[in-house]
Image (cartoon, rainbow, N blue to C red; front, side, top):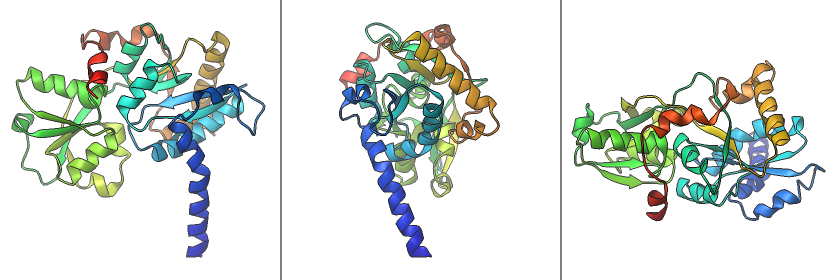
Length: 294
């Protein structure tokens, strides 16, 4: 029985590999060719790489598959090896649809990329956290002064931008180490490679229990409008509306609402650009500086 299970697990990963490769966007023009197993055109759906590509592919595939069944086009999962690369691909407009953090949306809504908000999580505010090892003597953020803190990337909004801005405002000087993803932050802290790390509650809760058991949340930021589902201008009004309708319908259907819950989404709602004015009010500056620093 164990050998059969191992064989099935191996076959499952073989089926997953093409999706992970697609997440690295080898040939973005493949969207015009469509899925070889479908007559429908392909639309590239990019997901911010808060976790490893294989983890994201596994988590997002059921939702994208269900959406593709309901839509006149096929959604192709895509991501990037790290957040800075994801930012570069947003800047190049490589994703037809993208799930991006609030700071990314504010920046890439502007010309020349002009991504347009489609949906967001309902009744949700995005807050960052700073975690330390469970046995760490650090009990207050003031004790982080002079310490090295891991962050996913300079422009990771709740996990990096807001915590760093808050620490700076409190005159707590730290050394920032950018490790590429939320998962890498939690692992670096749990292994004692850094004193603390920035993340968000959702990605922290998605980590294996064995990792979470080694960590504790030291501090939590204020809440802001959460991640955006946004579309590139080449996506037509009709395509936008059909995708929005499908996303909302899945959340209302008792048989498919679990697809959202598996991504830690309670429910979704239509979004307007002005929803992210709270982020704009922070006057965080342009994203070009973090991009140039990678």
